[in-house]
Image (cartoon, rainbow, N blue to C red):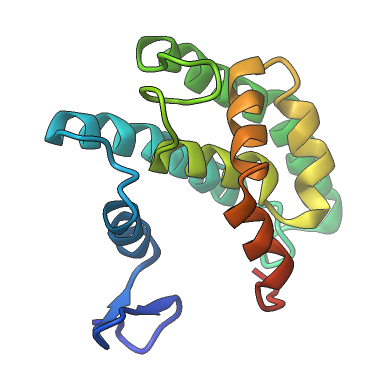
Length: 170
């Protein structure tokens, strides 16, 4: 089920799962990060999809080194606009929306870690190294998002994975 493309996940029983969102949702269910009810799952997934929308918007802005149809000056201009204007606005919208779902300051939904929290952490702390400083600056007014990202970053399992994961350009 992977169409010979990365990423893939091999489950404990040998099943191959492709597509990053499908992998993320599989792991969220497997590790009970999707809440208790179908409604919880939908809200948690909604927050995670907002994070995916932010990543998609950055990709569409077209300032990465993989963008071929722009000059370096155009990419630099678009990158500055993204981190100084677009990203702070999008993060502010997520922060505002979470006021309806967050019960505890360090969680996007409910009172324990969910897939939504992991998605926020990945967006703010596990981005490309070259973008980390600018991402942190863009999120500086988002106290709730930063608290969530810090909470996930302090998880011993996450810390262990970060220290042991294989090197990758992604």
